[in-house]
Image (spheres, one colour):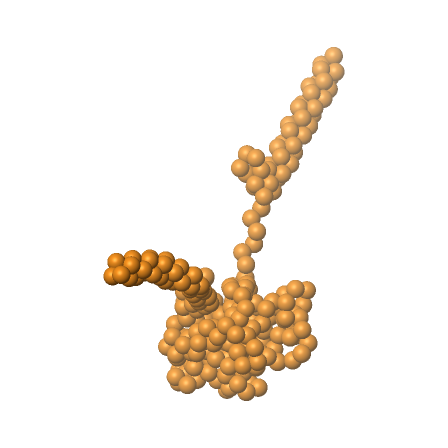
Length: 259
C-alpha cells in the first residue's frame, strides 16, 4: 500500500513539473522599449559667426552685451509656432563696423550698445522668399522694440537691402544660414537707429571696387599694348617704305640731270 502511494506521488510530481514549466514559458514576451527620439539640432551662433565669415566684431558686441545668450535661447526654440516664431539675425561684416566712427561706438553706454545689437535681430524666422512681401508690407519689428528700431526692407530685381534710422541702405550680402527656425544674413553696413544715435554718426564712404584688369594675350602682354605696338610697328614700316621711295625718285631725277 505504501509502495502504491509512493508511486502515485511520483507520477503526480512528474506531471506537475512539465505543466509548471509550460505555464512559465507561455507568458507573453516583454515588449521592447522604443529608443528615445534624437535630440533636435540647434545651430550654435557662436561657432557660426566665428567660422562662417568676417563677423568677429559683431560677435564681440553680442557677447559683451549678453545679447548672444538671448539670441541663442531663441534659436534653441525649435517649435516654430505662435509662441516661438523663430529668429532672424542681420550680421554686419567687420568692414561695416570699421566704417563707423570709432568714437560713436565707444561712447555708447552699455544699455545703448545692447539696444543697438537688439536692433539687428527680428523675433521671427524670415526666409529669403519672404523679403519681396516684406518690402510691400511695411517695417519689420526688431527685438529692440519701438518704431525707431524697426527695419524697412527694399526688394528690387532680386537685390535685398534693409534700412533703419541713419542707415538708408544696408545691402544683404549673403545668406550665412537659413534653416527653420533660424536665419542669419550678412550686411555691408551697420544699422544706426535714431533711438541709439540722436545725431548722425560719421560713416566712411565705401571703398570703390578696383577697375578690372585688361585682358592678357597669349604672349603675356596686355591686349591694348599689343594693339598699340602693332599699330606703331605698321607706321614704322610704312614710314620706312616711304623714305625708300623718296630716295629712289631723287636718285632717278639726279641721273636724268647728269644726262
